[in-house]
Image 1 (cartoon, rainbow, N blue to C red):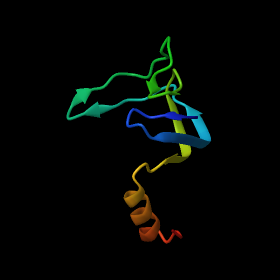
Image 2: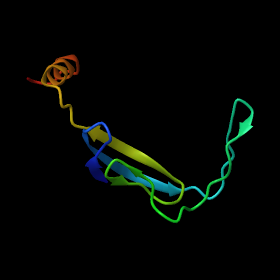
Image 3: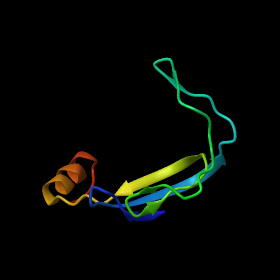
Image 4: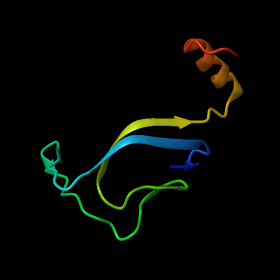
Length: 82
């Protein structure tokens, strides 16, 4: 899955494994958040269409760093070559 994010960054989601979520129970601060459903239309993050039903995906995601200074700082902090 790849496309433009709302921030303007190009992103790639690369699932290695995917599991359909048939049943789940979730609460937040004592408030019931509901049950999994299958939507009529796929939700989107920017240009990237997501699955219409609950899915647990395990894998990787990457986003392009648009700011050159941020890119160079990140490369030096993670041991990459500039």
